[in-house]
Image (cartoon, rainbow, N blue to C red):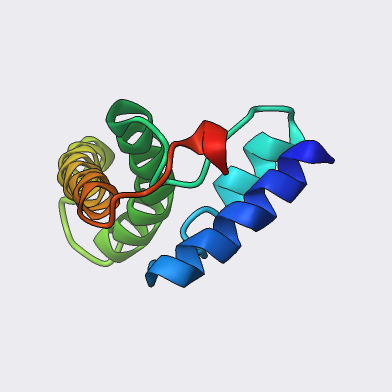
Length: 115
């Protein structure tokens, strides 16, 4: 219960500084939190953890979509679609994690322990 209260305070704080508070409400975050994994909102998470989480989220969706579209092509192989999804997901997660990192620095967010 304390963790939920802290997340609610973090949402209020993010709204007060003008940042989105919906970035950590995805299915993966809810699933991991329901399994007992303590995840902070993305602006307070480490760069590396953000890369891993965003890669996982995007890879699952992107692979499924690109694989369905590749079925319509002749000579399409799953391995090509897989490596394409890995590359695109890697770039996406890296860029998005950089964005979160710079936004948290630019807005001078409080330490997570002070929320």
